[in-house]
Amino acid sequence: MWRAISGAKNAALPILCAGLLTPDAVALSNVPRLQDVATMLKLLRQMGLRVEQDGENVTLNGDAIDKLEAPYELVKTMRAAIRNERAVELAFEEHRFWDVRRWKIAGEEGVMKGNMYGLRLRQISGSSDFHFEQVVFEQRVWEDKMYLYPFPNTEIYKQYLVQNPGW
Image (cartoon, rainbow, N blue to C red; front, top):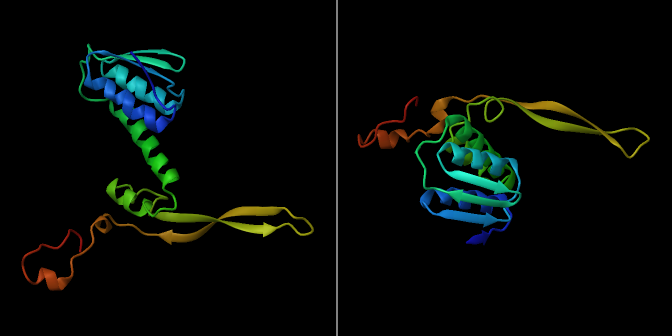
């Protein structure tokens, strides 16, 4: 039985993963031909799911699944794609501050540590065009103890809590 999906990557990826939940054949149509979908199909194949693809039609068969763990390199690729998607989709919704802490990537250069860059725009004299250059506007310092906030000393003195590491 064929099931049409919306053709959007965010709809296709979870539905493709659902093929792991049944030994029966699952036929999907309108699956977008994108890199993230190709990576997911490769990941599913390596876990033992039989995948047949014909353009935007994909058939999954889970009767021969033999691995319950996904290869690290493919998981790393999918994780990077999901993180990038969140950064783009939620750029102005104040999620990034908490995402980098939850994912423990704040200490990576350029995330919350090191040089932070901006653009300096200058109008070209006698023209309506602009010239821009990348400039460092801030040098940030990050220590891993910053993942956890310190408890106030008044709470520590009550001897019910132990201070978070590093504080």
